[in-house]
Length: 228
Image 1: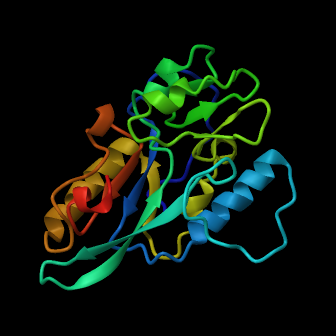
Image 2: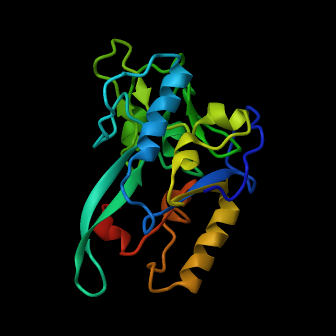
């Protein structure tokens, strides 16, 4: 479900401003259906202008050179001590002040004012400084490619330029992914916590972590128990 419709995104550089986009991920709504990861794969294939593998879709279990997002699974306990599986969408966090872009010596990674951290493979020299710099350990390295390119989610920047939502947010059937302006999403997240304190821990992950991220999370249990 979308909080706002994306307007066309212009090419720009610099830190994300007040109008920057983001995605609010509500882990209490995620059922692990993998609609988002399938949509991500299809969007990547479209952007790369390649044919999607006709074999049945096998949900990924980690990020790699061909996978930009996946659903992690963690066994947790609710407030009554009952165990259950919590599903967590993982991808690039699109930091407000991205360490990967700061570490890149050739400008292959840059932060757009609209939110996405984008990657230019033609500039990349495969030094992997971005991997070392990322506080979340998210960029992947294509060891099978002689050019040694990096892989990461770009928040479907191609779709944003057309005024569309990122593929993952557009595909979620449960309202677990909400796309909109980052500032609005943070306000909405706090409102949800206040209105339903029994459902969420009092923490919007990504509001302040690593200087702030464009991917924001709400959760039913402390984030430390979810591998954050």
